[in-house]
Length: 323
Image 1 (cartoon, rainbow, N blue to C red):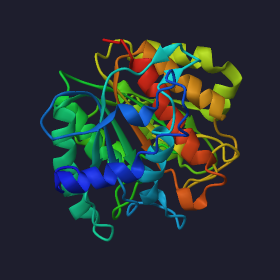
Image 2: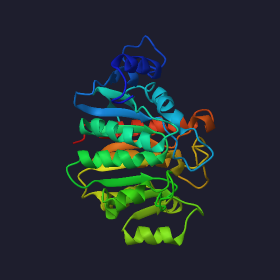
Image 3: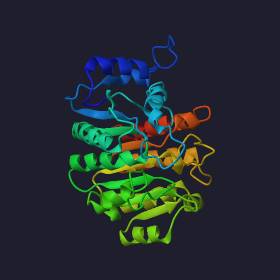
Image 4: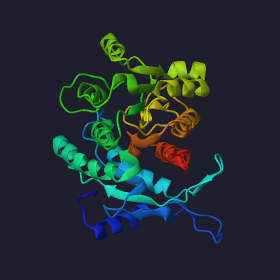
């Protein structure tokens, strides 16, 4: 919907996705959805939210992440504005930019539309939350972030996969390699968390080494713990003035996140994921966050949808009162 549909359609859309929780007579309870406003395409925002309901690049028969933007919003907007974990409350107005008007059967046309929409949103927002969709979308989102940034940006990628394949066709497995080869990101400014399994080739790890891309496998994370992991990533990216976090939910173990295109064992726990996102977003100047690969049709009791919403909430609370 971003940059493609009329305001009255946006109003109807937001009315449908903003679920304001269970209303109580308690005047002290404030709902996240009540702090969300429709973006008019002009005002400068502290935090903008946009959806990209597209899974045409999914490298799996388990498609369904196109349904995630509305479902995750429903969960997120039903939360209260106060976090007892961090003793912070959301007081800034949040702006929902609606969804990009995708063409589900046309990869290239969807990317063109996303490019235009992302450029507008990122240029007018201090922070952006993007909800996909499959991970191929992150290429255009990071390109928009880089254009809106003051200089080079850092990237923290939560993912079970490197997404560094060579390009053949249109799919979600090569977006990071393309960003590096197009000069949009420097490999030394990229840190991957959660990669695992027998899904790789020595040629990919060699490519990572050649481009100075660092990664922390899920196994190694379990061994060293969250605090050491935060220190390691922070040391790597502390020089960056602006950082982007992309979160492919398959970084999380299938026990906690069954609703994804590529579920697998041995991943992060939900607790590790939440602590890592909050720790990174509060310790680094993280301006942008995307949530990818949540597939509601394959979810169980909305575990994965809920986790996606909670991860976004952690990012928001971490950025409150941060420069």
